[in-house]
Image (cartoon, rainbow, N blue to C red; front, side):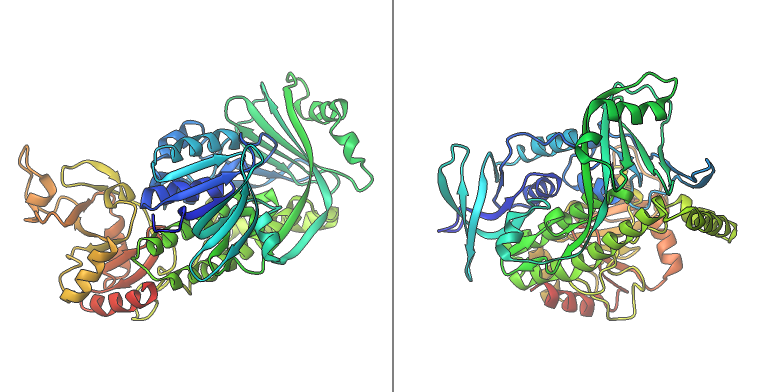
Amino acid sequence: MDHGFDTDVLIVGAGPCGLVAANLLGTYGGHTIIIERDTTPLDYPRAVGIDDESLRTCQTIGLIGDVLADTVQNTPIRYYTSWGRCFAHVKPSAQPFGWPRRNLFLQPMFEATLRRGVERYASIETRYGHDLTSFDQDHAGVTASVTDDHGQPTTIRAKFLVGADGGRSTIRRLLNVEMLGQTAPVKWLVVDVCDDQLDAPYSDVYCDPDQPVLMIPLPYGHRRWEFKLQPDDDENEQTETERVLALLRAQYRSTPLPTVLRARVYLHHSRTAARFGFGRVFLAGDAAHMQPPFFGQGMNSGLRDATNLAWKLAAVVSGRAEPSLLETYDAERRPHATEMVEFATRIGRMYSPRNHATERARDLGFRALQLLPGGKEYILQMKYQPMPHYTEGAVRHEGGHGAGAIGRMFMQPDVETMERRRCKLDDAIGPWFAVIGINVDPRANLSPETLAWWRSLGATFVKIVRARSGAKPVTGADFVGVAHGLTDPELVVLEDVDGGFRDWLLARPKDEIVVLRPDRYVAAVSDRNDFNVASQALREVLS
Protein backbone atom coordinates (compact mmCIF):
# COMPACT_ATOMS: atom_id res chain seq x y z
CA MET A 1 0.00 0.00 0.00
CA ASP A 2 1.31 3.47 -0.91
CA HIS A 3 2.39 5.65 1.99
CA GLY A 4 -0.47 7.72 3.37
CA PHE A 5 -3.25 5.43 2.08
CA ASP A 6 -5.19 2.82 4.01
CA THR A 7 -6.47 1.17 0.83
CA ASP A 8 -6.59 1.48 -2.92
CA VAL A 9 -10.39 1.35 -3.11
CA LEU A 10 -13.01 1.98 -0.44
CA ILE A 11 -16.41 0.46 -1.24
CA VAL A 12 -19.40 1.65 0.77
CA GLY A 13 -22.24 -0.86 0.77
CA ALA A 14 -22.07 -4.66 1.00
CA GLY A 15 -25.09 -5.50 -1.11
CA PRO A 16 -24.67 -7.54 -4.30
CA CYS A 17 -23.13 -4.65 -6.24
CA GLY A 18 -20.54 -3.75 -3.61
CA LEU A 19 -19.67 -7.36 -2.83
CA VAL A 20 -19.26 -8.28 -6.51
CA ALA A 21 -17.00 -5.25 -7.00
CA ALA A 22 -14.91 -6.33 -4.00
CA ASN A 23 -14.65 -9.92 -5.27
CA LEU A 24 -13.57 -8.66 -8.68
CA LEU A 25 -10.91 -6.40 -7.14
CA GLY A 26 -9.71 -9.37 -5.13
CA THR A 27 -9.48 -11.37 -8.36
CA TYR A 28 -7.59 -8.64 -10.22
CA GLY A 29 -5.35 -7.58 -7.32
CA GLY A 30 -5.02 -4.44 -5.20
CA HIS A 31 -6.18 -3.60 -1.69
CA THR A 32 -9.87 -2.97 -0.96
CA ILE A 33 -11.86 -2.06 2.15
CA ILE A 34 -15.61 -2.60 2.04
CA ILE A 35 -17.81 -1.13 4.78
CA GLU A 36 -21.47 -1.78 5.53
CA ARG A 37 -23.66 -0.30 8.25
CA ASP A 38 -25.58 -3.56 8.74
CA THR A 39 -23.88 -6.58 10.26
CA THR A 40 -26.03 -9.22 8.50
CA PRO A 41 -27.69 -9.36 5.05
CA LEU A 42 -31.12 -7.73 4.99
CA ASP A 43 -34.02 -10.16 4.79
CA TYR A 44 -36.81 -8.01 3.35
CA PRO A 45 -38.09 -8.45 -0.25
CA ARG A 46 -35.50 -7.52 -2.83
CA ALA A 47 -34.00 -9.04 -5.99
CA VAL A 48 -34.94 -12.60 -7.01
CA GLY A 49 -33.62 -12.82 -10.60
CA ILE A 50 -30.08 -13.19 -11.93
CA ASP A 51 -29.29 -13.24 -15.64
CA ASP A 52 -26.58 -14.76 -17.82
CA GLU A 53 -24.36 -11.66 -17.78
CA SER A 54 -24.32 -11.65 -13.99
CA LEU A 55 -23.64 -15.38 -13.88
CA ARG A 56 -20.67 -14.79 -16.17
CA THR A 57 -19.33 -12.32 -13.62
CA CYS A 58 -19.85 -14.94 -10.91
CA GLN A 59 -17.77 -17.25 -13.09
CA THR A 60 -15.00 -14.65 -13.25
CA ILE A 61 -14.83 -14.38 -9.45
CA GLY A 62 -14.80 -18.14 -9.04
CA LEU A 63 -18.19 -18.44 -7.32
CA ILE A 64 -20.37 -19.75 -10.13
CA GLY A 65 -20.71 -23.23 -8.62
CA ASP A 66 -21.76 -21.85 -5.24
CA VAL A 67 -24.26 -19.46 -6.82
CA LEU A 68 -25.85 -22.06 -9.08
CA ALA A 69 -26.13 -24.50 -6.18
CA ASP A 70 -28.83 -22.24 -4.71
CA THR A 71 -30.43 -21.11 -7.98
CA VAL A 72 -33.42 -22.30 -10.01
CA GLN A 73 -32.05 -22.14 -13.56
CA ASN A 74 -33.70 -21.31 -16.86
CA THR A 75 -37.16 -20.53 -15.44
CA PRO A 76 -39.87 -19.57 -17.96
CA ILE A 77 -42.36 -16.76 -17.46
CA ARG A 78 -45.95 -16.60 -18.72
CA TYR A 79 -48.14 -13.54 -19.25
CA TYR A 80 -51.92 -13.83 -18.96
CA THR A 81 -54.81 -11.59 -19.90
CA SER A 82 -57.54 -10.76 -17.40
CA TRP A 83 -59.72 -13.42 -19.04
CA GLY A 84 -57.06 -16.13 -18.58
CA ARG A 85 -55.42 -16.35 -22.01
CA CYS A 86 -51.62 -16.77 -22.11
CA PHE A 87 -50.58 -14.11 -24.62
CA ALA A 88 -46.78 -14.46 -24.19
CA HIS A 89 -44.52 -17.28 -23.03
CA VAL A 90 -40.87 -16.39 -22.46
CA LYS A 91 -38.53 -19.38 -22.25
CA PRO A 92 -35.02 -18.54 -23.46
CA SER A 93 -32.96 -21.62 -24.31
CA ALA A 94 -29.99 -19.97 -26.04
CA GLN A 95 -26.88 -19.43 -23.91
CA PRO A 96 -24.67 -17.06 -25.92
CA PHE A 97 -22.64 -16.08 -22.85
CA GLY A 98 -22.34 -19.60 -21.51
CA TRP A 99 -25.15 -19.55 -18.93
CA PRO A 100 -28.97 -19.64 -18.77
CA ARG A 101 -30.58 -16.27 -19.30
CA ARG A 102 -33.32 -16.28 -16.66
CA ASN A 103 -32.61 -17.69 -13.20
CA LEU A 104 -34.19 -17.28 -9.75
CA PHE A 105 -32.50 -17.11 -6.35
CA LEU A 106 -32.82 -15.87 -2.78
CA GLN A 107 -30.83 -12.67 -2.30
CA PRO A 108 -29.78 -13.28 1.33
CA MET A 109 -28.22 -16.60 0.25
CA PHE A 110 -26.54 -14.91 -2.71
CA GLU A 111 -25.09 -12.22 -0.48
CA ALA A 112 -23.86 -14.84 1.99
CA THR A 113 -22.01 -16.53 -0.88
CA LEU A 114 -20.46 -13.23 -1.95
CA ARG A 115 -19.43 -12.48 1.64
CA ARG A 116 -17.67 -15.83 1.86
CA GLY A 117 -16.05 -14.99 -1.46
CA VAL A 118 -14.32 -11.85 -0.23
CA GLU A 119 -12.93 -13.79 2.74
CA ARG A 120 -10.68 -15.65 0.27
CA TYR A 121 -8.55 -12.57 -0.28
CA ALA A 122 -5.99 -11.19 2.16
CA SER A 123 -6.14 -7.96 0.13
CA ILE A 124 -9.80 -7.31 1.09
CA GLU A 125 -10.91 -5.99 4.48
CA THR A 126 -14.58 -6.21 5.42
CA ARG A 127 -15.89 -3.89 8.11
CA TYR A 128 -19.52 -4.59 8.94
CA GLY A 129 -21.33 -2.28 11.33
CA HIS A 130 -19.37 0.69 9.90
CA ASP A 131 -21.10 3.73 8.46
CA LEU A 132 -19.70 6.53 6.27
CA THR A 133 -20.75 9.98 7.48
CA SER A 134 -18.76 12.30 5.19
CA PHE A 135 -15.81 12.43 2.82
CA ASP A 136 -13.46 14.87 1.09
CA GLN A 137 -11.52 14.27 -2.09
CA ASP A 138 -8.38 15.91 -3.45
CA HIS A 139 -6.13 15.38 -6.46
CA ALA A 140 -4.56 12.24 -4.94
CA GLY A 141 -7.38 10.46 -3.11
CA VAL A 142 -10.41 10.47 -0.84
CA THR A 143 -10.59 10.83 2.95
CA ALA A 144 -13.72 9.23 4.40
CA SER A 145 -15.09 9.82 7.90
CA VAL A 146 -16.56 6.61 9.27
CA THR A 147 -18.14 5.49 12.53
CA ASP A 148 -17.08 1.99 13.55
CA ASP A 149 -19.16 -0.80 15.09
CA HIS A 150 -18.75 0.82 18.52
CA GLY A 151 -19.93 4.21 17.27
CA GLN A 152 -16.42 5.67 17.41
CA PRO A 153 -15.27 8.01 14.60
CA THR A 154 -12.37 6.99 12.39
CA THR A 155 -11.01 7.94 8.97
CA ILE A 156 -10.09 5.88 5.92
CA ARG A 157 -7.77 7.27 3.26
CA ALA A 158 -8.34 5.68 -0.16
CA LYS A 159 -7.29 6.38 -3.71
CA PHE A 160 -10.87 5.85 -4.93
CA LEU A 161 -14.32 5.64 -3.36
CA VAL A 162 -17.24 3.58 -4.71
CA GLY A 163 -20.74 4.35 -3.48
CA ALA A 164 -22.74 1.12 -3.69
CA ASP A 165 -24.86 2.14 -0.72
CA GLY A 166 -28.34 1.72 -2.18
CA GLY A 167 -31.28 3.84 -3.19
CA ARG A 168 -30.89 6.15 -0.18
CA SER A 169 -27.19 6.56 -0.87
CA THR A 170 -25.30 8.75 1.59
CA ILE A 171 -22.55 9.26 -0.97
CA ARG A 172 -25.01 10.44 -3.62
CA ARG A 173 -26.56 12.85 -1.12
CA LEU A 174 -23.15 14.23 -0.10
CA LEU A 175 -22.28 14.72 -3.76
CA ASN A 176 -25.61 16.54 -4.22
CA VAL A 177 -26.39 14.46 -7.32
CA GLU A 178 -29.84 14.77 -8.85
CA MET A 179 -31.81 11.59 -9.59
CA LEU A 180 -33.55 12.16 -12.91
CA GLY A 181 -36.86 10.48 -13.64
CA GLN A 182 -40.04 9.80 -11.73
CA THR A 183 -41.65 7.72 -9.00
CA ALA A 184 -44.89 5.94 -9.87
CA PRO A 185 -47.80 6.99 -7.62
CA VAL A 186 -49.14 3.42 -7.34
CA LYS A 187 -47.92 1.12 -4.57
CA TRP A 188 -47.39 -2.65 -4.68
CA LEU A 189 -47.61 -5.21 -1.90
CA VAL A 190 -44.74 -7.73 -2.00
CA VAL A 191 -45.24 -10.97 -0.09
CA ASP A 192 -42.55 -13.62 0.42
CA VAL A 193 -43.66 -17.09 1.53
CA CYS A 194 -42.06 -20.43 2.36
CA ASP A 195 -43.36 -24.01 2.78
CA ASP A 196 -44.98 -23.48 -0.62
CA GLN A 197 -46.79 -26.46 -2.17
CA LEU A 198 -48.21 -24.78 -5.28
CA ASP A 199 -47.48 -26.78 -8.44
CA ALA A 200 -46.31 -23.87 -10.60
CA PRO A 201 -42.59 -24.13 -11.52
CA TYR A 202 -42.66 -20.96 -13.62
CA SER A 203 -43.29 -17.27 -13.17
CA ASP A 204 -46.77 -15.94 -13.89
CA VAL A 205 -47.90 -12.40 -14.58
CA TYR A 206 -51.63 -11.76 -14.55
CA CYS A 207 -51.90 -8.50 -16.48
CA ASP A 208 -55.27 -7.35 -15.18
CA PRO A 209 -56.15 -3.64 -15.46
CA ASP A 210 -57.90 -3.83 -12.09
CA GLN A 211 -55.70 -6.17 -10.05
CA PRO A 212 -52.43 -7.30 -11.68
CA VAL A 213 -50.55 -10.04 -9.83
CA LEU A 214 -46.99 -11.36 -10.19
CA MET A 215 -45.92 -14.80 -8.98
CA ILE A 216 -42.30 -16.01 -8.88
CA PRO A 217 -41.15 -19.49 -7.76
CA LEU A 218 -37.98 -19.45 -5.68
CA PRO A 219 -35.58 -22.09 -4.33
CA TYR A 220 -36.27 -24.32 -1.35
CA GLY A 221 -40.04 -23.96 -1.18
CA HIS A 222 -40.09 -20.16 -1.33
CA ARG A 223 -42.30 -18.08 -3.57
CA ARG A 224 -42.88 -14.36 -4.13
CA TRP A 225 -46.18 -12.64 -4.80
CA GLU A 226 -46.71 -9.04 -5.85
CA PHE A 227 -50.12 -7.36 -5.78
CA LYS A 228 -50.87 -3.91 -7.11
CA LEU A 229 -52.71 -1.81 -4.52
CA GLN A 230 -55.64 0.45 -5.28
CA PRO A 231 -55.35 4.22 -4.67
CA ASP A 232 -57.69 4.08 -1.65
CA ASP A 233 -55.99 1.04 -0.03
CA ASP A 234 -54.56 1.76 3.41
CA GLU A 235 -50.87 0.83 3.32
CA ASN A 236 -50.77 -0.38 6.92
CA GLU A 237 -53.85 -2.54 6.51
CA GLN A 238 -52.39 -4.29 3.45
CA THR A 239 -49.56 -5.86 5.45
CA GLU A 240 -51.82 -7.18 8.19
CA THR A 241 -51.86 -10.98 8.36
CA GLU A 242 -55.53 -11.51 7.54
CA ARG A 243 -55.41 -9.19 4.53
CA VAL A 244 -52.31 -10.97 3.16
CA LEU A 245 -53.83 -14.42 3.72
CA ALA A 246 -57.02 -13.35 1.95
CA LEU A 247 -55.00 -12.38 -1.13
CA LEU A 248 -53.11 -15.67 -1.03
CA ARG A 249 -56.25 -17.78 -0.63
CA ALA A 250 -57.51 -16.45 -3.95
CA GLN A 251 -54.33 -17.78 -5.60
CA TYR A 252 -53.85 -21.11 -3.79
CA ARG A 253 -57.51 -22.20 -3.74
CA SER A 254 -57.45 -25.90 -2.75
CA THR A 255 -53.66 -25.95 -2.21
CA PRO A 256 -52.59 -25.53 1.44
CA LEU A 257 -51.53 -21.99 2.25
CA PRO A 258 -47.81 -21.34 2.68
CA THR A 259 -46.12 -19.64 5.61
CA VAL A 260 -45.88 -15.87 5.19
CA LEU A 261 -42.33 -14.68 5.86
CA ARG A 262 -42.78 -10.97 5.27
CA ALA A 263 -45.00 -8.45 3.53
CA ARG A 264 -43.97 -4.93 2.55
CA VAL A 265 -45.45 -2.12 0.49
CA TYR A 266 -43.27 -0.53 -2.19
CA LEU A 267 -43.22 2.43 -4.51
CA HIS A 268 -41.57 1.89 -7.90
CA HIS A 269 -38.86 4.36 -8.86
CA SER A 270 -37.68 5.03 -12.41
CA ARG A 271 -34.65 7.24 -11.81
CA THR A 272 -31.03 7.59 -12.94
CA ALA A 273 -28.29 9.74 -11.43
CA ALA A 274 -27.21 12.72 -13.51
CA ARG A 275 -23.64 11.41 -13.37
CA PHE A 276 -21.97 8.20 -12.21
CA GLY A 277 -18.43 9.55 -11.72
CA PHE A 278 -17.12 12.56 -9.78
CA GLY A 279 -13.34 12.75 -9.79
CA ARG A 280 -12.26 9.86 -7.57
CA VAL A 281 -15.78 9.00 -6.41
CA PHE A 282 -18.18 6.71 -8.29
CA LEU A 283 -21.81 5.64 -7.89
CA ALA A 284 -22.93 2.10 -8.68
CA GLY A 285 -26.05 -0.04 -8.34
CA ASP A 286 -29.15 1.49 -6.74
CA ALA A 287 -27.09 4.50 -5.71
CA ALA A 288 -26.80 5.30 -9.43
CA HIS A 289 -30.12 4.07 -10.82
CA MET A 290 -33.42 2.61 -9.63
CA GLN A 291 -35.95 0.80 -11.77
CA PRO A 292 -39.25 -1.02 -11.27
CA PRO A 293 -38.84 -4.78 -10.65
CA PHE A 294 -41.03 -5.84 -13.58
CA PHE A 295 -38.18 -7.23 -15.68
CA GLY A 296 -35.89 -8.32 -12.84
CA GLN A 297 -32.97 -6.17 -14.00
CA GLY A 298 -32.40 -3.84 -11.05
CA MET A 299 -29.71 -5.92 -9.36
CA ASN A 300 -28.32 -7.14 -12.69
CA SER A 301 -27.83 -3.55 -13.84
CA GLY A 302 -25.89 -2.93 -10.63
CA LEU A 303 -23.70 -5.97 -11.25
CA ARG A 304 -22.98 -4.61 -14.74
CA ASP A 305 -21.79 -1.41 -13.04
CA ALA A 306 -19.51 -3.38 -10.71
CA THR A 307 -18.13 -5.50 -13.55
CA ASN A 308 -17.43 -2.43 -15.69
CA LEU A 309 -15.88 -0.34 -12.93
CA ALA A 310 -13.79 -2.92 -11.07
CA TRP A 311 -11.37 -3.79 -13.87
CA LYS A 312 -10.80 -0.12 -14.61
CA LEU A 313 -10.02 0.61 -10.96
CA ALA A 314 -7.66 -2.38 -10.88
CA ALA A 315 -5.90 -1.24 -14.05
CA VAL A 316 -5.38 2.26 -12.65
CA VAL A 317 -4.24 1.34 -9.12
CA SER A 318 -1.77 -1.19 -10.58
CA GLY A 319 -0.28 1.49 -12.84
CA ARG A 320 -1.32 -0.33 -16.03
CA ALA A 321 -3.66 2.48 -17.09
CA GLU A 322 -4.03 6.18 -16.47
CA PRO A 323 -6.80 7.59 -14.21
CA SER A 324 -8.47 9.04 -17.31
CA LEU A 325 -9.65 5.49 -18.08
CA LEU A 326 -12.13 5.84 -15.22
CA GLU A 327 -13.95 8.57 -17.12
CA THR A 328 -15.22 5.87 -19.47
CA TYR A 329 -17.30 4.34 -16.64
CA ASP A 330 -19.95 7.06 -16.85
CA ALA A 331 -19.79 7.17 -20.65
CA GLU A 332 -20.38 3.42 -20.92
CA ARG A 333 -22.72 2.61 -18.07
CA ARG A 334 -25.06 5.58 -17.66
CA PRO A 335 -26.70 5.42 -21.14
CA HIS A 336 -27.47 1.71 -20.82
CA ALA A 337 -28.63 2.01 -17.20
CA THR A 338 -31.02 4.75 -18.31
CA GLU A 339 -32.25 2.56 -21.16
CA MET A 340 -32.91 -0.33 -18.77
CA VAL A 341 -34.84 1.94 -16.39
CA GLU A 342 -37.04 3.13 -19.25
CA PHE A 343 -37.49 -0.44 -20.54
CA ALA A 344 -38.56 -1.78 -17.14
CA THR A 345 -41.01 1.11 -16.83
CA ARG A 346 -42.57 0.23 -20.21
CA ILE A 347 -42.83 -3.43 -19.20
CA GLY A 348 -44.69 -2.29 -16.08
CA ARG A 349 -47.28 -0.57 -18.25
CA MET A 350 -47.84 -3.88 -20.03
CA TYR A 351 -48.32 -5.60 -16.66
CA SER A 352 -50.94 -3.07 -15.67
CA PRO A 353 -52.84 -1.76 -18.72
CA ARG A 354 -54.91 1.38 -18.22
CA ASN A 355 -58.20 -0.30 -19.09
CA HIS A 356 -59.69 -3.33 -20.82
CA ALA A 357 -59.62 -1.63 -24.24
CA THR A 358 -55.86 -1.08 -23.86
CA GLU A 359 -55.50 -4.68 -22.76
CA ARG A 360 -57.32 -5.96 -25.88
CA ALA A 361 -55.08 -3.85 -28.11
CA ARG A 362 -51.97 -5.21 -26.39
CA ASP A 363 -53.23 -8.80 -26.80
CA LEU A 364 -53.86 -8.29 -30.52
CA GLY A 365 -50.41 -6.76 -30.89
CA PHE A 366 -48.73 -9.79 -29.34
CA ARG A 367 -50.77 -12.16 -31.52
CA ALA A 368 -49.68 -10.26 -34.63
CA LEU A 369 -46.03 -10.21 -33.54
CA GLN A 370 -45.95 -13.98 -33.09
CA LEU A 371 -47.32 -14.49 -36.61
CA LEU A 372 -44.41 -12.59 -38.16
CA PRO A 373 -41.27 -14.52 -39.22
CA GLY A 374 -39.07 -14.77 -36.14
CA GLY A 375 -41.69 -13.09 -33.97
CA LYS A 376 -42.30 -16.01 -31.66
CA GLU A 377 -38.56 -16.57 -31.29
CA TYR A 378 -38.13 -12.86 -30.51
CA ILE A 379 -40.37 -13.31 -27.46
CA LEU A 380 -39.22 -16.79 -26.40
CA GLN A 381 -35.51 -15.90 -26.43
CA MET A 382 -35.91 -12.48 -24.76
CA LYS A 383 -34.41 -10.72 -27.78
CA TYR A 384 -36.34 -7.61 -26.84
CA GLN A 385 -34.07 -6.97 -23.82
CA PRO A 386 -31.77 -3.97 -24.42
CA MET A 387 -28.19 -5.22 -24.36
CA PRO A 388 -25.23 -2.97 -23.56
CA HIS A 389 -23.45 -1.57 -26.59
CA TYR A 390 -20.59 0.77 -25.75
CA THR A 391 -20.04 3.15 -28.65
CA GLU A 392 -17.79 5.39 -26.55
CA GLY A 393 -15.27 4.63 -23.84
CA ALA A 394 -12.59 1.93 -23.65
CA VAL A 395 -13.23 0.61 -27.16
CA ARG A 396 -11.72 1.13 -30.59
CA HIS A 397 -14.27 1.38 -33.40
CA GLU A 398 -12.01 2.64 -36.22
CA GLY A 399 -10.52 0.36 -38.83
CA GLY A 400 -13.56 -1.13 -40.54
CA HIS A 401 -13.59 -4.32 -38.48
CA GLY A 402 -15.93 -5.79 -35.88
CA ALA A 403 -19.11 -4.12 -37.11
CA GLY A 404 -21.79 -4.62 -34.47
CA ALA A 405 -19.45 -6.59 -32.17
CA ILE A 406 -17.17 -3.92 -30.70
CA GLY A 407 -18.52 -2.62 -27.42
CA ARG A 408 -20.74 -5.67 -26.91
CA MET A 409 -20.28 -8.71 -24.67
CA PHE A 410 -18.45 -11.48 -26.50
CA MET A 411 -19.77 -15.02 -26.85
CA GLN A 412 -18.57 -17.79 -24.55
CA PRO A 413 -18.43 -21.10 -26.40
CA ASP A 414 -16.84 -24.28 -25.08
CA VAL A 415 -13.21 -24.85 -26.04
CA GLU A 416 -10.61 -27.55 -25.41
CA THR A 417 -7.27 -26.89 -23.76
CA MET A 418 -3.92 -28.35 -24.80
CA GLU A 419 -4.68 -31.34 -22.57
CA ARG A 420 -8.07 -31.81 -24.26
CA ARG A 421 -9.93 -30.59 -21.21
CA ARG A 422 -13.27 -29.17 -22.32
CA CYS A 423 -14.21 -25.92 -20.58
CA LYS A 424 -15.84 -22.56 -21.11
CA LEU A 425 -13.81 -19.89 -22.87
CA ASP A 426 -13.39 -17.59 -19.86
CA ASP A 427 -11.99 -20.40 -17.72
CA ALA A 428 -9.33 -21.06 -20.34
CA ILE A 429 -8.19 -17.48 -20.96
CA GLY A 430 -8.20 -16.12 -17.40
CA PRO A 431 -9.96 -13.11 -15.86
CA TRP A 432 -7.92 -10.25 -17.36
CA PHE A 433 -7.35 -8.92 -20.90
CA ALA A 434 -7.22 -11.54 -23.64
CA VAL A 435 -5.91 -11.07 -27.19
CA ILE A 436 -7.47 -13.83 -29.27
CA GLY A 437 -6.22 -14.81 -32.71
CA ILE A 438 -8.53 -17.06 -34.71
CA ASN A 439 -6.29 -19.45 -36.67
CA VAL A 440 -3.46 -16.94 -36.22
CA ASP A 441 -0.93 -16.06 -33.52
CA PRO A 442 -2.05 -12.55 -32.49
CA ARG A 443 1.55 -11.54 -31.76
CA ALA A 444 2.79 -12.28 -35.28
CA ASN A 445 2.74 -8.76 -36.75
CA LEU A 446 3.19 -6.70 -33.59
CA SER A 447 6.17 -4.39 -33.27
CA PRO A 448 8.50 -5.09 -30.31
CA GLU A 449 7.24 -1.94 -28.58
CA THR A 450 3.57 -2.86 -28.98
CA LEU A 451 4.19 -6.45 -27.91
CA ALA A 452 5.98 -5.15 -24.81
CA TRP A 453 2.98 -2.95 -24.03
CA TRP A 454 0.54 -5.85 -24.21
CA ARG A 455 2.83 -7.80 -21.90
CA SER A 456 3.02 -4.89 -19.46
CA LEU A 457 -0.78 -4.78 -19.46
CA GLY A 458 -0.80 -8.42 -18.41
CA ALA A 459 -2.77 -9.61 -21.43
CA THR A 460 -3.13 -13.30 -22.24
CA PHE A 461 -2.30 -14.26 -25.84
CA VAL A 462 -4.63 -16.91 -27.26
CA LYS A 463 -4.67 -18.82 -30.51
CA ILE A 464 -7.88 -20.59 -31.48
CA VAL A 465 -7.37 -23.56 -33.82
CA ARG A 466 -9.98 -25.53 -35.73
CA ALA A 467 -11.39 -28.55 -33.99
CA ARG A 468 -9.48 -31.76 -34.79
CA SER A 469 -7.45 -30.03 -37.47
CA GLY A 470 -3.99 -31.09 -36.29
CA ALA A 471 -2.31 -34.46 -36.21
CA LYS A 472 -3.95 -37.20 -34.19
CA PRO A 473 -2.73 -36.80 -30.59
CA VAL A 474 -0.33 -39.18 -28.95
CA THR A 475 -1.26 -40.51 -25.51
CA GLY A 476 0.44 -38.52 -22.77
CA ALA A 477 1.36 -35.58 -25.02
CA ASP A 478 0.16 -32.04 -24.79
CA PHE A 479 -2.49 -32.94 -27.33
CA VAL A 480 -3.51 -29.69 -28.97
CA GLY A 481 -0.16 -27.89 -28.83
CA VAL A 482 1.90 -30.77 -30.13
CA ALA A 483 -0.65 -31.59 -32.81
CA HIS A 484 -0.31 -28.07 -34.17
CA GLY A 485 3.40 -27.64 -33.51
CA LEU A 486 2.74 -24.97 -30.87
CA THR A 487 4.58 -25.20 -27.56
CA ASP A 488 5.24 -21.53 -26.71
CA PRO A 489 4.45 -21.15 -22.98
CA GLU A 490 3.27 -17.55 -23.52
CA LEU A 491 0.59 -18.63 -26.00
CA VAL A 492 -2.62 -20.32 -24.86
CA VAL A 493 -3.76 -22.70 -27.59
CA LEU A 494 -7.42 -23.75 -27.65
CA GLU A 495 -9.46 -25.94 -29.97
CA ASP A 496 -12.77 -24.56 -31.22
CA VAL A 497 -14.80 -27.65 -30.31
CA ASP A 498 -18.11 -25.75 -30.16
CA GLY A 499 -17.62 -24.11 -33.55
CA GLY A 500 -18.29 -20.64 -32.18
CA PHE A 501 -15.11 -19.14 -33.62
CA ARG A 502 -15.61 -21.00 -36.90
CA ASP A 503 -19.01 -19.37 -37.27
CA TRP A 504 -17.60 -15.97 -36.25
CA LEU A 505 -14.97 -16.13 -39.00
CA LEU A 506 -17.41 -17.41 -41.60
CA ALA A 507 -19.61 -14.40 -40.96
CA ARG A 508 -16.69 -11.91 -40.86
CA PRO A 509 -13.64 -13.42 -42.63
CA LYS A 510 -11.29 -10.49 -41.95
CA ASP A 511 -12.02 -10.22 -38.21
CA GLU A 512 -9.17 -12.53 -37.19
CA ILE A 513 -8.11 -10.91 -33.91
CA VAL A 514 -10.41 -10.00 -31.03
CA VAL A 515 -9.38 -8.07 -27.92
CA LEU A 516 -11.49 -8.91 -24.88
CA ARG A 517 -11.60 -6.65 -21.86
CA PRO A 518 -11.78 -8.21 -18.38
CA ASP A 519 -15.55 -7.61 -18.36
CA ARG A 520 -15.73 -9.72 -21.55
CA TYR A 521 -16.74 -6.84 -23.79
CA VAL A 522 -14.99 -6.53 -27.14
CA ALA A 523 -12.47 -3.69 -27.05
CA ALA A 524 -11.17 -4.04 -30.62
CA VAL A 525 -11.32 -6.28 -33.69
CA SER A 526 -8.88 -6.38 -36.60
CA ASP A 527 -7.16 -8.57 -39.13
CA ARG A 528 -3.58 -9.68 -38.63
CA ASN A 529 -2.16 -6.86 -40.75
CA ASP A 530 -4.06 -4.08 -38.95
CA PHE A 531 -3.53 -5.30 -35.39
CA ASN A 532 -0.46 -3.19 -34.72
CA VAL A 533 -2.43 -0.03 -35.57
CA ALA A 534 -5.45 -1.23 -33.60
CA SER A 535 -3.24 -1.91 -30.58
CA GLN A 536 -1.77 1.58 -30.70
CA ALA A 537 -5.24 3.12 -30.84
CA LEU A 538 -6.38 1.05 -27.87
CA ARG A 539 -3.22 1.94 -25.99
CA GLU A 540 -4.15 5.61 -26.29
CA VAL A 541 -7.51 4.90 -24.68
CA LEU A 542 -5.98 3.05 -21.75
CA SER A 543 -2.80 5.02 -21.15
